[in-house]
Length: 510
Image (cartoon, rainbow, N blue to C red):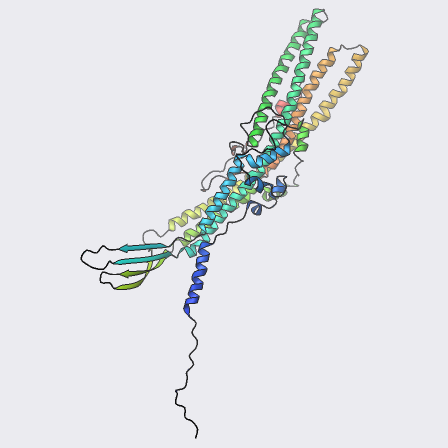
């Protein structure tokens, strides 16, 4: 007999996936997002090739930024001859304006990372004081703001753009600082050369005066010649004093550029002339753009503050997006536990939503739109001024090159030809020896002019590099007017105004 089944047939239910693991995974992902930050790019990552642009090995600027600026670099003790390479390396570490903008960039990096973090949860705990009851009522709630989730992109975008802008400004200051140090070094070497020439000229003028006085005593000259020699000697003495003042000013400028403005002046630069300093600083003639379009492309590629201004536009657009998103109600969700005076317990959920009745944020959106427009206007004004600065700098290069070539190829060459004729006349007895001394006096004047012309030519080339570097932008705010390049100086080793080329003071002296 077949056996009869006594059990009921089994019904297979579909396997249900627990909800808890999925919720846990989502919560873990949100927690990781809320606690993780991106420090952003470094200066080398934001501006590739920055060390090469300032003519330094890779990693030089990062290493200089890591050094303590309060400890003087032992490469120069303040008394030995100062080399051009050493001056540039010291400036990257001890220039106060450069170090300040680097510190500002790191501060902005911290602000950027802080902007990426979620707001902290809110915990509320309340308890009663039992008077005629035996149970202490308690209320505990925890809440978390949720609207940060859809505002995070705009908040982080604004912070990232501001960090990028400040890094680009720091790079522009680094390039400008390198240019400033080289310009100050060349000016100091030229001032040393001029000071030697003026002292030698004063000695020659004194020798001519003594010869004229002796000739007057012997009846071979008149009083007019003596008076003329005396005036020339006085002028030569004044020029020697002016050149000494110029040397003090040039040394002080170089000390400020390298961040040692309080150091003494008992030192010399290693280069004996402006021409030697030009070679030591590796100053080359700037490339001449073919046309205006090429000039604009060159400026757009090289000016770092233009990219910084564009980053500020991106930051303003992010703030506009944040203002638009912030018009939506803010939301906070929470949960809590309660025990009343009768010892009844309950678990509750909480939702807190702001209702935009009185202030719906439309005026904040309008203000943010105007900030975007202001940022775009400032960026375009900076672009136009950058092209104008580069054009003026190129014109200064042409003028300085022409002036130096005329002095060397015409004035000095003509003098040397006349000097050979004069030497032959003195040797034959047709002219007195004092004529050669007067000729030497004239030669000193020409060589002083030539030394200053060589300095101005080098400074003009460096001025073009400065025009392609840019500098700090006005502080964030939108309404701050753009400052002229010559007013963007920074105290204690910062950027100063470019030295003007005063060709009127370099005329060939008769």
